[in-house]
Amino acid sequence: MTLEPTRIRLARERAALSRSALAASLGICERELAHAPEALSLALAEALGCAPQFFQLPATQAIDIGRIFFRSPRRTSTAQKVAAAALGRHGVELYNLITQTFRLPQTEVPELCGFTPEDADAQLRTEWALGCGALPDVLHLLESHGVRVLSLPASLEEVKTFSFWEDGQAFIFLASGSRNAQRLALAHELGHLLMHSTLGENREQLAVAEREADEFAARLLLPALSLQVRVSDSLQIPQLLLLEEHFGAPAKVILAHARACHLLGEDAYQWLSQELALEPPAEHQQLVSRVFSLVFPSLQRDHRASTARIGRELGLTAEQIHELSFGQAFVLLEGQNRCDTGEAVRGHLRAL
Image (tube, rainbow, N blue to C red):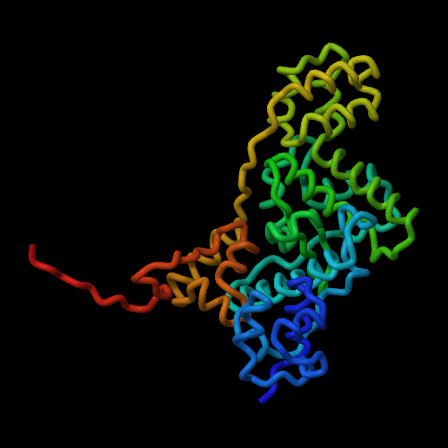
């Protein structure tokens, strides 16, 4: 029995290994990868950082790179894009497994191609009944409208947050960062999903799309009416930091957007920017996914499905599931009594 060649390719792309490098590490020639025997599954899994079962799953392929919205498309290398596209397929398959047991909301992101960022913000606030105040938890908001949000592993942090559509569902892979930076990144990706169809490699189109997504994110997090009554040239750093907490947006974004909306003069903007640079950086606060906080405990409790077992179904390691789920999938540490949840452990009594 031979292993599925498309699975070998997907794992290789995720690991950013060339065919020649992988073949050399296994001591075989490149053409043998297309007909690799089952006996090579363990060696392949070790070389590519996945589970041996991965190569026996049905044929698949990475997400088409042309359909992915990258934060820095011109500065992201082809190898990084390919690895992110392979990771995207892992995320889709994880959610496919989840939806076999749980009913999640279908994506309710309106198509607003051709809208200006200002009009797109107004339309979304109407359709999602967001009012004209500060937004609640953005991650929970997106999940409640069917957007599948996963966390980006540290190995791909340089790619930054990215998003794409797959079978009518919206997916976002969120990079780490401060709470407010992550809220901004989520709002930026939502702007792409709303306003932009698949982008090509045209430099001008990419630049325009990024600016539009930036403006949409600022408008979504900083509603005009609420900002107008709070910002003027008399703004001071303590007040700015309170606004940062109130709106859940980075202070530098508040300043830039207030200047763009003519709520803040150039002199006040420059002075506040200089003072803000002296403030200590915000601490990273891990966001919590409502989907994963409900799904994984339920799978373990009601279905005897530990993270390790979920990983085996997907051909991934428990650590990879943990990385994709904001650290909310439980991973057992190596130890003498390690076992999957749901497997009995015989106790030992000893008289003292």
